[in-house]
Image (cartoon, rainbow, N blue to C red; front, top):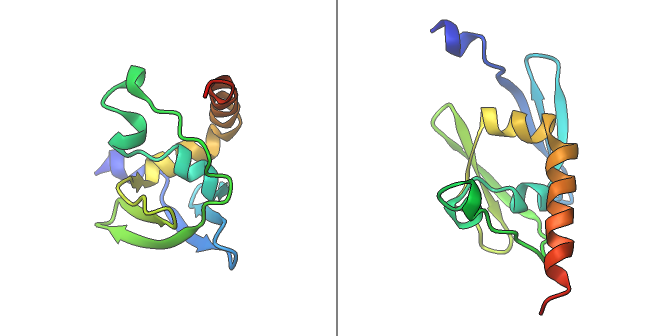
Length: 121
């Protein structure tokens, strides 16, 4: 249990009234405000991530996506239901922490990849 005890644990998950931002506060003192669009395009689902790093899909057109609901999954994750119908990704506490900590890098990589694809088609 020492491994589990040393892992950051979420103290609070809060969805804003506009349903566009999920705020997550961890017991480490870290807290992150994660935009619905960012969560949607970085969903841990196979639809987005594929079955390996080389299969990741760049999901575009989600600038106005909202979060319809949050559903706990055991004591390790949440399922986020988006208003575009996507609800297959399970966001573990570790993954939410990663999304917060690596936001700048992940978001820049997404924007670069999305812009590259926007001129074709």
